Image (cartoon, rainbow, N blue to C red; front, side, top):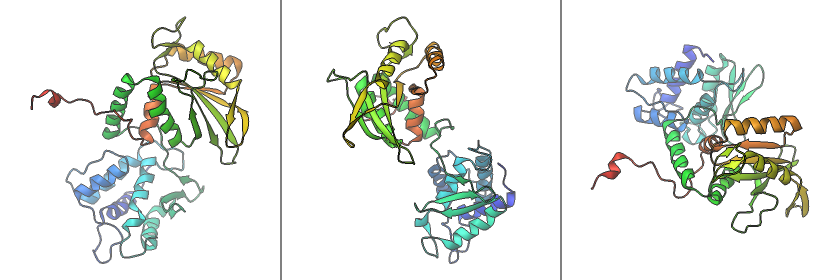
Length: 329
């Protein structure tokens, strides 16, 4: 997505706060605070000491060159920049609803076909004027990660290498699925040795129509492969698939409605890799039976979702040791 240079420079001046102090509608940001601004927008851009508004305009151009969620939607990073710029707590020389600042930003964005507006959550969004499409930043697990996010990802990898299956469920999967909007998440656990038909976790998801879907999770700590039988921490995909089918065929009790219900969908979750052979076997099996009820996630899926959802690391997850740790002082 390309914006006119004039538009980029005007928005850059707003981000920098390049206006007279007694008339400005925007916070003044020096070099350090420009870097902090773009860090708040979940990017890695650091001001290099050059002319501030020219650098910001160039950075905005780079952000707009990122992949777009749709044809009339700017990249998620740009939507976060606009939301950060229009933070209502940073109002200057006007009320917190920032009508004058909003009008100034709207004047710049109008030539690009967009309109900024505040929603009920007091955040600023962009609307594509011609199609009425609203840009809402998504937690995209396939986007490029920042350096800080890659560090957190490495810390979680190190933790997963040592974690037990119960720890994977209790400290990673349960908080992750809660963050993603699932409700009534219940873990059967392995300690009681009484898992019902292989269900490690059951939960429900409420659709915007208020209809409810029930999900079950079959979690394994290690790698899922297509070997003839389970060996060590590696689990056989056929065994896990059979457990998932058993899960779909038996009821769970939902205490909120006082009824027993069937699981609508099953997640097969691996704390390790799901090998290519295992994926092919499972894909062929699901295609042959036309089953859309069984879904699977491996370690990479867990890591990416955990990072983009901005989840706190599990207790015991420490930064990777540096060379300085070996020094005797």
